[in-house]
Length: 384
Ligand SMILES: Cc1ncc(COP(=O)(O)O)c(C=O)c1O
Image 1 (cartoon, rainbow, N blue to C red):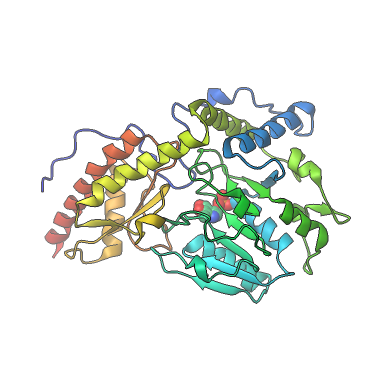
Image 2: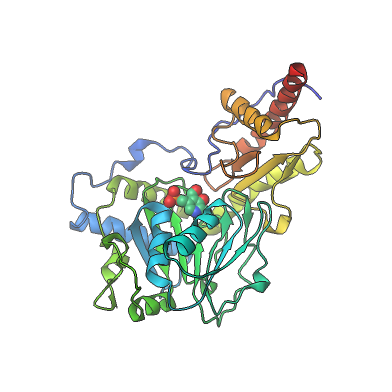
């Protein structure tokens, strides 16, 4: 193995899994049309918010009878609005295979005190969907951002289920197909696949989710920020851009710019193709290496956005310290920023491969990972 540094570097070293790389060639000048200093309830503000909803529907191909709302507090806000507003009348199943899914289990079991069936899989694996009873309300994360494991498709979810499916799709939306006929609630944040900003969430509701909202009042108090009904009727304005509280029109403009970039590229299919090409560049690189592997055990459930890697060389003495040192080295070299594994996840690297990342940059990073690995291994030998 050679210790010579690779000749080429990624042009953009931003491989963070959130906030993710902005769209290629992004510049703040692109946001010049933001109606700053104007009310978001003025015609100009409302038009921007409505356009963001319309373009979301167009790019994601959200069915016409599903509501799309822009809500506060990013993806977390959107998920918690759904959990607090919808859960209670039916049995609940919580599915988790990494840290964010586990966070939703805590919300439901410890905060809402619902006696839910909890199904968990360790990092690298996914729960068995065949065991899930979809006549219960089921809460799950489409793509586990911290484990790099995702739901492969919606085949296991019956179209005629009696329960609601509540899906945190924040690191999947725009990069993976989401079967809306199988999903009653879909949430995401702008800061992921389209490289937008944090703070705003998108909440998508099926007609059955709306029916639940209008027919059921939870026993617990509901903060204003979560309230989607008034007098037992859906507040339709929320789903036309009349947000519950004040959004950032700068962030809305930024999201619009990203959506228009996506449309110009060819829409969702093009975004998915870019993501898959990025993930493939990593899969191809690691395929013949015996010192690095995907954390996802089954390629069918391996994420194409948040690709998590583990070092498997038996010569490594302290796995956590080693992985941290590699990530630090990549950062110091300026070839990969924020590429360390999530704090609660097994030691390793996490390379964001979403649609705003260029495949040439992922490919250029690969030899640097090998170089950093070899350099750290040599440094480890010296300290023994
Ligand atoms: C799967 C998943 N759910 C929820 C969140 C929280 O998102 P936000 O910080 O946008 O609320 C994240 C953030 O990385 C995530 O990856």
